[in-house]
Image 1 (cartoon, rainbow over the protein chains, first blue to last red):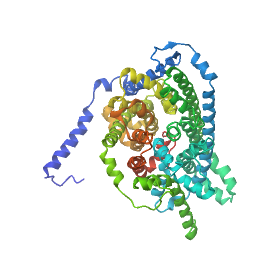
Image 2: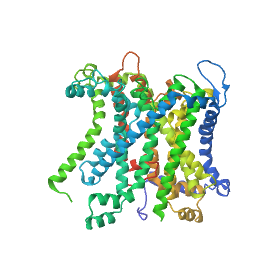
Image 3: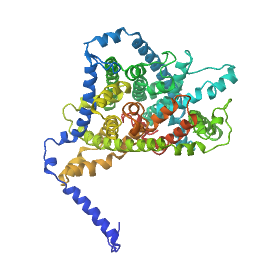
Length: 327
Length: 276
């Protein structure tokens, strides 16, 4: 800024006066009830608490309350209190245990494969700073995870389509057999898993890159000077630093895989039969196709408890990391 | 380290991996430029003469514009409200640590960890009773609520990184609380704000389930019209789906191209920092 030259442009003068005015106005915005209040921290929290009350506490209480009722939107009967019977029913339900089992299989394979592939890719991309067009390449690589499952499900329905889909074009030319990926009882789960792996391997790769980036350069150089073998370098130098971020990534991915719903809904709607019916789908179907609100609320309460357990694990690892970083 | 042809092969391999991951998306974009016959051809056509007919068809559908407008309006408003609210709360959590703040942070995180299908049941019941279904404010404020936890987590992490001395200096020199908040702290947590903004925007832009359940004709966003287009009775309208998907793709794609360095913060609730 040149202060000594006379400013003749009237518009600019007006602007600078306005700017100065704005600054002092903000400074003068000294509302005693804000500045001197003991409750200032609470005032800041108030909007969040209002949101919280309206969209979390009320629905939560509603859900817990509803789980003790027999309430179906189809019959039009008023809700009837039945105590814990919904929960006993859940415990006895073959569908719920089946769904939990399928969710477990889905989470296990999805997270396992994604972690493995993601770590491989992360290590592969570790030295990629010189890559020409790196930004575009990474954008292409990361794009699967920022696309909505509703859209990717649609893409893959087109790709898996039994008559004109490109996946079947390859299977017929290579193996000479048509496979109805999403309609076959055996293939439906692997096909869904493949889409999830496609979507989330980049995430694990991103996590691996971050984890590798957290290893101090000096220690890596020391390892190179000492001529440690690659295995030892990974085990003794990289892993102690990288493990927390990797664990955080794996837990986050586990939670997300447990939550999966719209992807499978869009791909198979839980079918054929119920081979891909994970918990989210069961919940959705019972609530919005069967309209048994009481029963679904009970199942929702159970999934909420599972989610709380997952969150605790996540925070435990986070605190572990912080403690190690501080010591 | 590596030089010459070894590096070239390495780079080639990296590009190959990226392209393989992008292929399914390319296939859809190609589909958007095909005629219906080309799209449904057996065997699938890799080489075809591109046409813009699908897009002109898309533009002639009035529900396309309404869902595009809804998507933009709802995500922008919801995220803006969420960020403002979250910034105030994060400042309070970070500086004053009111009693129970750990618990609230935990609950906020849990909200994002619960399967959406479990959250949607009570919200559906509540919205039906209150009559908020298919209401712009109802849907938009719900998304604002859904963006808050994530923003609070990210912003708290960033505000923790700003020394409280800045606050003290500001107050001692005669600045008001608001001055300290918006003129001293806010500019220093800009990366956090950007990360929170972009990732909530992507999240709301992508959201399907809640929009499907608590939305309606007036509040349909793009993912829902995609799904309803693909679940249509009497066969899927594939050209419509492919061209709508192509339009839908553009904002998230641009977002991660231009804000790549925030990707990591965005995907991990701000708990992991670093460059990729």
